[in-house]
Length: 101
Image 1 (cartoon, rainbow, N blue to C red):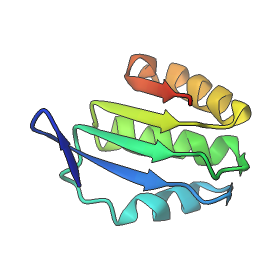
Image 2 (tube, rainbow, N blue to C red):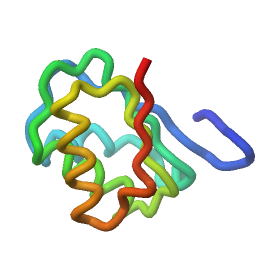
Image 3 (tube, rainbow, N blue to C red):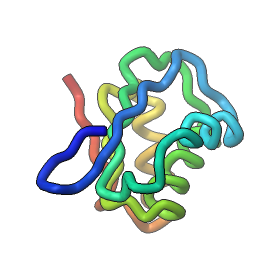
């Protein structure tokens, strides 16, 4: 756990190949419920992420868990596009953050 300004947040590293909604749920299963401040997802190793995987991540983190923000770090361009589209369709685009290095 990392804390910033008194708000609990977590970091998850995504494997190179991810593809299903079920895989997204499994990735977030071990993340304690206390991470409501925000979640950082390291995407630097990711080479392929399907729209359904990305949509499920956005939905779980920003809608179901009601985190304040979701930050994707170094996502591939297609993953970035899927995430923005998903966040817009769910009405949470302002809570999706992108960090590119």
